[in-house]
Image 1 (cartoon, rainbow, N blue to C red):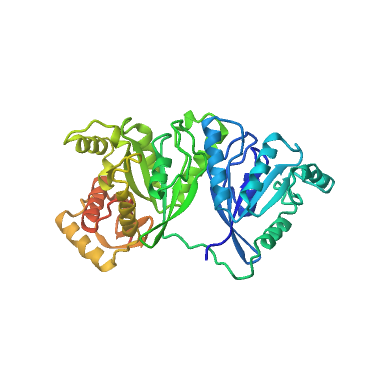
Image 2 (cartoon, helix red, strand yellow):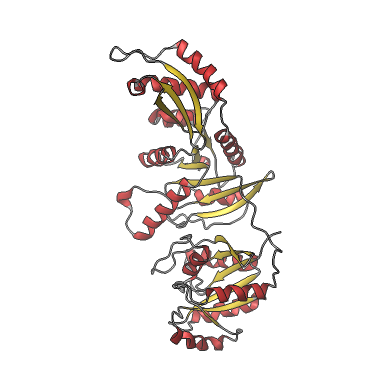
Length: 438
């Protein structure tokens, strides 16, 4: 059973993200004194007294602004309210009612959704009377809370349970995803566009302005009976080019998303080509042991002949030889060209990453590898590799037991890795070889 959805709405900087993070007991949304940090809808599940709820953190609602970001943020907030079973309308008790609050109060009334008016920043007992200034909205009894120190948040959750008329045990925790798939890349390569194309709806804000996405945004997708969690992330730039703390926090969120993923899609802008920062991002993903697929986006903008794709792929692999082991897919998020292949390829790589090679089969192949090319002696020492076994998945780690683990040459280790990849199909998956003393 799908559990109740609660949309948190309000004008900028009233404490929506602070409250959202407190409920989830983690820093899911970026919080800062600067207005307008949250832009997209950010989802999070909360359990309270045996009840499960899904909260949606939204961007600050500014009714009369016609800047493209404000229009997009308003649309995301309106979509959240349409989806919600209950609207949590949050205002700033210290600042008092504003024109934006009045406009949003009218919108909440017109939505005909159950609602709660939460007056935030009532941080201590003496501030509770701040709620009275909001009676003029004509909404039902305002409720004082403090998102910062948690004051009355439990009482507010109890009120939500009453409003939604839920009963103990009538809902269950959400379905767990099979695959967690992060979409990363430099700013403005089309990560949000790809997310929306895969979902077939406008889930995240898309803009030609770099840096539109700030948080790492999770959304579940059902694909042939499987649950896939897509994670749209903020663009990654070189550290020396990061100018403010918001971009720094966005980068931290993106790196955290990579660490928590099974497979990572690294997007490259077809028009800009493969650059140093793209290589740095890929190296970062590989170092974390994550399955990886290179996605060349905006392929519709390239003038093509019969050899364009092969030439582009050749240049990429020539610049970064390690990419010989990883698939490259050419797509257009705008025209949907080959977008259907993204999830197919991601699932193939995911299944390979979950596989564990039997020790018997591994040692049969190892015997052939060594007989074909024995390890060269080093310093008068004959090197013998006794046996091998896979000791880990995600990342794949294969341990080789030998009499002189520190004397194996890098070229021979590379030879063994290439042979292992050739015999067991590790396409898209980083593998680590660990040589240990027998």
